[in-house]
Length: 206
Image (cartoon, rainbow, N blue to C red; front, top):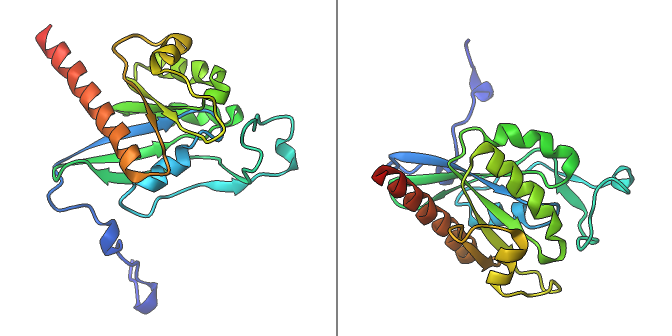
């Protein structure tokens, strides 16, 4: 095909190009219920301009989508969020945020394909949503860590109390975070990578 003049396809922006030192990459999914902060987390930590698929919420969602605790939310992810972060000069993580409403959960299966691990974001105002989320990851065999997003009006609990309430095993890391802060979101991802490394080392010793 012959491209001419302004019809040529531009290359990626300099800030979006993969670092030349990168040698390996891993796919990570960010999951959780509606309005728990998945889009915010991907956006805060991504070193490239994140791709989002947010659409304005309409009257059609009333009675269908559970927006408890997110009454001021006016847009929602309908497919996925995508970002990228370099953990080291050699290792790059590709981040995929899943849609939160249950009517879009059928898209999760495709997003889980090839995922090395996951972050489960939890809102203490709606803990019950987390059971289905973690159950789907367990069914797919995707290792995960749990990050409790600190909403200003959300009740605070001891992390071990939350571990018991969520019925997660002692080996699964659980931590508090503020997904609006890049450093906090990056700490969650680093905890996940350390957890995945420990699982790999345990498997290697067997």
